[in-house]
Each structure stands twice: as structure tokens, then as C-alpha cells.
Length: 478
Length: 96
Image (cartoon, rainbow over all chains, first blue to last red; front, side, top):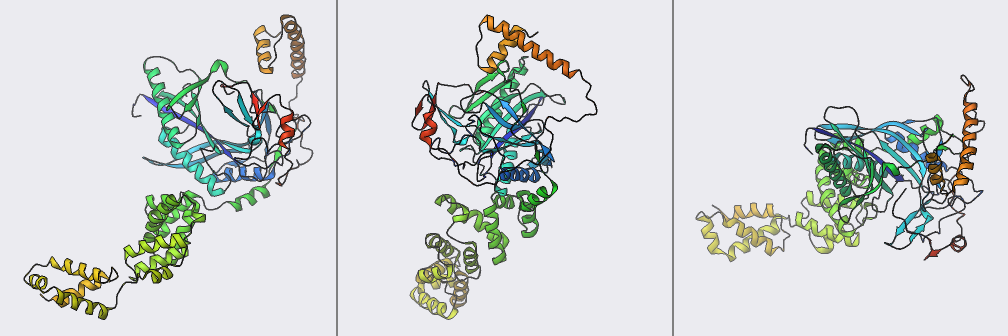
């Protein structure tokens, strides 16, 4: 995307399902994967006479995200009805916020090749989710209403994003923040975090926006990057051939890696928004906002900065460690108790992350507690066991969750660092290899490696190699 | 007066189909309603705050305690057609 004649303009809409105890307007319990149509009631089914009552927890979570993205929180916001007919929506309208959203004017900082940049946030508002349809080609469609009324926040960015890669960086940040706050599990594949992308091109240097198209159904970061690139290329070709862009909505088809047109402007919706008469305006006072502010943990960007300063870690290391709050917390305990930040970072980024991947488990349920890993690192650093023995001990700790010292004892892995024991061993090895000793003294110094190898073999890998080397040099003479 | 296209658009939005007689009848009635509102809009309301949603009391908010789900069999009883616990509807591809 290095063509200089056009600039790409991208805006993103992210829908995030909030991890509330109950749905947004009723007491049904949201549960992903529950049996179809078992988490529904008259309110979320839109049965006549049923009235919505707003869930306080969902507002608290939305305010949390608003504050985390540096938004202004509106003292009064308002729900509206967005009217449409589709089988996934039994009320025939979605309850959303239209002209009076809860949060406005924030930003998300992303790293680009030209340094950090703020992607502005236009608004964050609350709304209810629709049901889930499954389509069998050529056959009837099946509807599960369990998802109806699950609270969503919609996070709308300003058109500040320029490439597919930037879009992904922005989304990764948003996902991290949602997870740090513990308000959404951010799972794109399961749809707890969903993303729509608006794309337009304009002549470089122009400040006017071109006609935009929308892509829906992007359910992985890879799909988002590819989908954006695909659409940007398509628009560029149309414009370069002198054509004009038609305002359309496309669906990303992950199987074929293509965009499928969903509707054109002529079929664009007429949602007839009007204030939701069943709900009073939502009032949020300063006390509520202050209370929410106190609930916000250190966010990934601040944590990364602190890791760089406090532990002298690189941008890369602090980025990897802070991607997940649980990993960052784990690392900090290890680093604090060993006092060795870089060594601890390496262990967490290599061994721990590899083990998590192999086990398919989360850091929270990982069998080796951070204090125990710190113990293991200390054993290696103090020369009690060798680096390779450390790997064996770690493997055993994953299996049994045992204390590293116990594992070392059980496997008999303590390094021999007692020089008298090693001296005896060296003496007998030199005596057993007089020829090699002679050649060594004649100048074939490379044979020292041979002798060290013999010591390691004799000690079954437990000799401290550094110490063995020194004793050998002394005993072999020159 | 509403145009024929506007009436057809409203039919589409409301998912109803009118025959020509009904269309003429509703065209008149709906136009009257719009005219009525237009008359109201002529009143000068500068300096008055909207009372449509006046905040006379604080809205009640619900604390999250789960419960109250309906039994699935009862829910599905109401549906014209079902399959394996799902509501069954005619095939749809286009998502509004």
C-alpha cells in the first residue's frame, strides 16, 4: 500500500460483549454455548407488556472502558430504538444509544513505524445484542435467542487509521484493555468481540472523505488485515480506472478469502431511531464515575512503560510480557523474588509461554507457581544445577507442580562443585588416558575438551564444567 | 401529501402490503397526521426545555442477580416451527 496518489482512511466499530452476571435489560444469565433458547425471558424475547430495566453492572463496565480510553462520561445519556426486521431480533428493534451516547471523545495510543500515534475514539455506547442465526444452505434458518439482550458496548473510532496493519494494532490494544479491565473476554472467533471496518480512499493531501464501504464478519486479526488490504486494492483499481465507489456493505468470507457483497446503498437501512419510551434517561453522577475510576487497574501501555523503566527491559520484551495481565503479574513475582529481571523475562517468554502453548492452559492455572520458578532460576544462577539440568527440573515441575529443590534431590541433579571430589575424579581420568595427556602437553590444547567431556561423562553431567576445566588445566600441566 | 414512493417505502419498513385502494386511503390519513405535526412545529418554543423525557425521578437500576429464564418447551410452544430447540424460520441470507 505504498501508492502515493491515494490515502487510505479507515474507521473501526468494535462490539464487545460485557461479562455481566445478567443481561442488560433482564435477569437472564448470559452463557456462551448454553443449549439453544434456554437463557431467555419475556423481556429479551420482546413479549407484549414486558419492560426493560437497565443493569447497573453493564453501565459500570461501559464507564470503565470509557475512562480507560480517556473519554468524557456523559452526565445524562439516553437509549433509543433502532428499528429493523430480522429473525435474530424478536423485539423488531435494538435498544441502543443514538444521539446521546454514554462516552465521547477518547483515544487509543498505537505504535507505528513513525512512533506512537493516537487513534481518536468518537464514542462508546451501550446496546443489547441480537440472537444468533445458523444458516443451512438452501434450507431453513435456525434461531437461538440466548444472545438477545447480552450487553454490548460499541466502540467507534474516528477515521484515523491508514493501513490494515494499523487497524490490527488498534484492535489488539482495544482487546488487551478490555481483558485487563476484565469486562470482556475479547474472543473474536466466538464473537464476544466483533469488528466492522469502514474504508474509503481519497487523493493524498485531501481532507474530504471519499465514499466508504463497510466490511462485516471479520472474525480474526488475519481476516481484518487481509480484508482491509483486499478492499483498499479494489477501491484503488476502481478509482484509477476513473470509476466511482459505490456505498456497499460487504461480508468477509474467510473460507475463500474474498469479500461478498451484502447490500448496496439502495437497500441501505432506514432505522427510524426514536427515544426508547420504556427507559428513562441514564444519569451518571461524579461519585459513580470516581468509584469506577478506582476499579481500573494499571493498563497495558502504562505497564509496558514501567517495565522498561523499572526492569530495564526492551520495548519488545515489555510488549510481550504485558500483552496479558496474568503473564505480566507472573513475571513481576518472579523478577521481584530473583532480583534478576532480564533472566526472569527470558524464562517467562520462552519456557513458560512454550509450556502454556503445549498444555493449552492459561497462566492462571499453570502448575508452576511464580515463586517456584523463581526458586529454579536461583538454583541455576547459584550453580547448584546446570542450565540443562534446569530444563529437566522445569519439565518435572510442570508434571508434578513440585518444589524445584525437591525435584533436584529426587532426580539427583545437584552439580558437583566440591573440588576435592572433582580432583579425585580428574586424577583417575588423567591416569586412564596417558596418551592424550602426553599429546596435550606437547601442544595439542584442544584435547582439554576431550578431558572435560570425560569428566562430565564420569559424573553423569553433574560436574560443574567450569570447575572441572580449571582443575584439569592445573593437573594436566603445560 | 405523501408520494406513492414514500407510501411504498413505509409499507416496506412496516412489512405490510397494501392494495391500491388502501394505499390511497392511508396516503390521505398519514399525510393528515404529518400535516398536524407540521402545524404543531410552527409554535415558537424557544426558551422552553423539552419535557418529553423530563427527569422527574432517578431511574431504577437493576443489580445483577441471575434468574427468571423461561422453560424452553414453553417458549417454543409459541413458535410456528422449531427444530432441535431452535426457532425455525424461512431461509435468510441478507442481513439487515
